[in-house]
Length: 115
Image 1 (cartoon, rainbow, N blue to C red):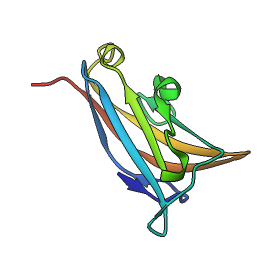
Image 2: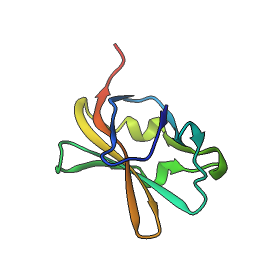
Image 3: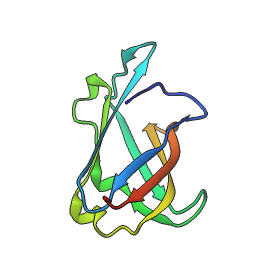
Image 4: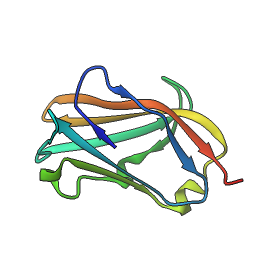
């Protein structure tokens, strides 16, 4: 998925399958060119509702593997997703540089079991 930093964030729905590894790369671009993320950090939080309780703080699962490629990678292992219960929630993905926080993505996230 490719996104461009802006305010407000881009709205995008996601699905995590309970009991499976979740791997989601996001490529951040500016005018179609990958943004150099050197010096940036990323954060994603999953909540049960907007302004609600945190289901998952993804701090331990989010990396910027190669800053010059503009990629933010979130990898939540199956041992963690297996602790989730079926439900819908919301998430916010932000990027920080110094004291400035940029909203990137926001949306509904479904926590589902395989059929």
